Image 1 (spheres, rainbow, N blue to C red):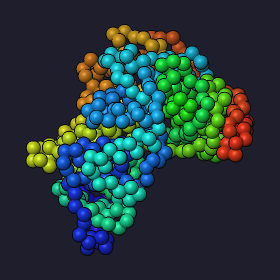
Image 2: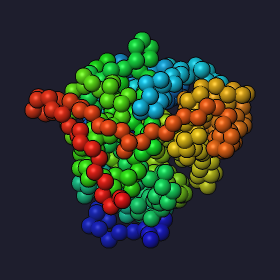
Image 3: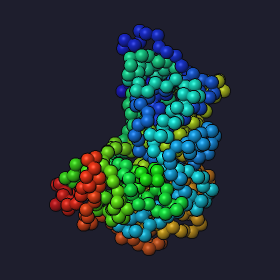
Amino acid sequence: MPTAATTSTSDSATTAPERFDVLIAGGGPAGSTAAITLARAGLRVCVLEKDHHPRFHIGESILPRNTPLLRELNLEAHVRALPHMSKYGAEFGFANDPATRRFTFNDGLLPGFPVFNIERAHLDKLLLDQARVAGATVHEGNPVRSIDHLAEGDVRVTAADGRSYAAKLLIDASGHGTIVGRHLGTRKAFDEPELQKVAYFQHFEGVRHLAGIEHGHPGIFMSDEGWFWLIAVSPTKTSVGFVTRPSFVRQLDVPPTKLLQWAIARAPVVRERMANATGPADNQVLADFSYKCRPCAGPGYMLVGDAGAFLDPIFSTGVTLAMMASHHAAGLTIRQLAGQLSPAAARADYTSFVERSTSPFWSLIRTYYKHEFRELFMEGSGPMSVHKAVISLLAGQVFPKPVWTLRWRHTLFNAFVRLQKHVPLVRRRARFSLLTETPAPLSLTGTSGDRQAVIVSAPTLVGVS
């Protein structure tokens, strides 16, 4: 495994590198937020981004806690000028039961904030453009190809164009690529089966949504095998996805590009809402999550957003966690490079920030896949306002760490989940399996414009008696 300080014998090492204060690998929300913050502070910043924006990306539902950060960065008006859907709450339910639970973020223990769903192509391009406006040097289509040296105050990388870049610090915002995590061999997937997931998703037109201010409520619909999301990203366009276990998918004789339609055909609530939907008959796939890279900071580097860890997207944490962490990392970097904070102190502060703010979500994710959690959460009430505390956590009220009034109620809620398994604190709810549901025709408009029924036959299992 490479050590933190490594060198390369590449040809680029013989060429004088272009020097900056900070290099940022990746120009998504995490990298752009760090670049905006650092460049506005007068630091020389270079972003090396693999894609050309705009580009498609999932993760369209933003948490309310993101709104104060956008205001702090003076970006809220810019973002709200983009096509988006206002988001005031969310909807949870079982995929076979139209009686769902709906809540607004103002129902939480702490005040909510107005927020939105948005196509990431629009949001990410805006943020990267704002990094340019702030003074950052941005290279699109030119990712970090190799890390040539990684040490305290001395970082050198080679980009895809063969040019060498040097800086005092590398902020890794490369997402699933986890440039530093892979370089150091610290990227580790979880052994827990419930944290091993794969997502199948696509955008559709004409999906039916709730009325009024609930139109922007992300819909989460659950089954034993996984869960569906329905997120309105514009008045007509909806992001639809299905998240499940790779071990389950391996039992099915279904092509990966047809898995979403296979699942929808067996989920009555989702199928009904998509009765008049149009869109591709094939879906996209995102696998290989969840994981962590630890430590999230070391000599010469900090990991932000998905480069440091990827959480199951059930609670739409991705963009908010990425932007909050990168903004905090940038603030520490400014102080460090100004001599106001030692590198060791900056790393300790950042590590503590990441651990404190993400631990409630890891806990929620682990309990979410327990049927007892779903029974309690769907009830919509509880003693000592524990249900209100869960709503506030789902709103992202965890930075820089959850306040005590949320923490003890979350602990109590987890105790109720364990107790519910043995004693019915709330009414029992029947489990729902996609494998027991008779599939019904799902008609979509493919790229040819012809409507077609897809994935309507009974499930075929492979290697299961």
